[in-house]
Length: 277
Image (cartoon, rainbow, N blue to C red; front, side, top):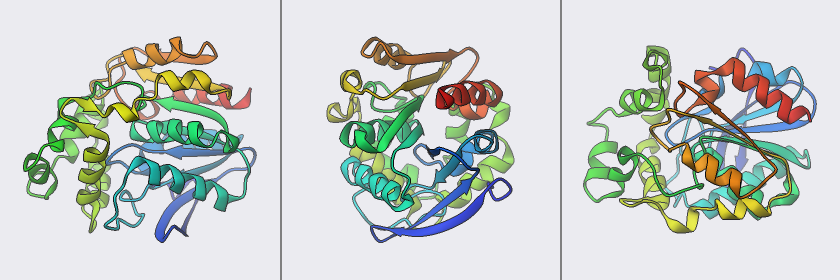
């Protein structure tokens, strides 16, 4: 769904046939989607950002049109996967922009490998607190997780409805695309493994809450959140901003978990200003 704004490509990273799109020219920017999503969640942003930057949009392992192998999908391995993808691009430092799980992975990549991250933008990011929706915590339990992800229950539209403040944005087209990629062989199993690696019934596992660590990052940081986010509460954004005085914080009213899709004009303006500084 991004073919009209960039060139679709594949590359082998650590044995994973990885799908990505590249568009524009200029300083490099990498967009990283969230759990159960794909690069399609950046469809309203790529063209705008590509007017000034060279934009790379990736389908993470287990998602989109990237391979979905039977691997662990742990945070540490995925951070190294992102590092190797950036290394493959040969761009030196890159600005990381991540939504939800993608934000948590971008944050952990910046903490582990600050030498490759020029700027960090987090959109309703994971890893800034423990609290997450009950609908993400329940699948961490035995049996329930298998029921939710075995294909007998179609959770795609339900979760999209939860992600938006404006429910009309969970369009048939968007639901169909995410349903297609999540239904590819290995997709649902990958999502369940990721949930259980990161989340328990009590919320995000403590070792993956890195809000305090954000204070030691020296690159410019942007945080964008929706005030009506029902997936990850906006108080995580304020907490992170208190831990680093250089954080540029924007909280959009009447907006849910994916500000880049729900308020694209405002998001693109703020992102362009941040990336251009």
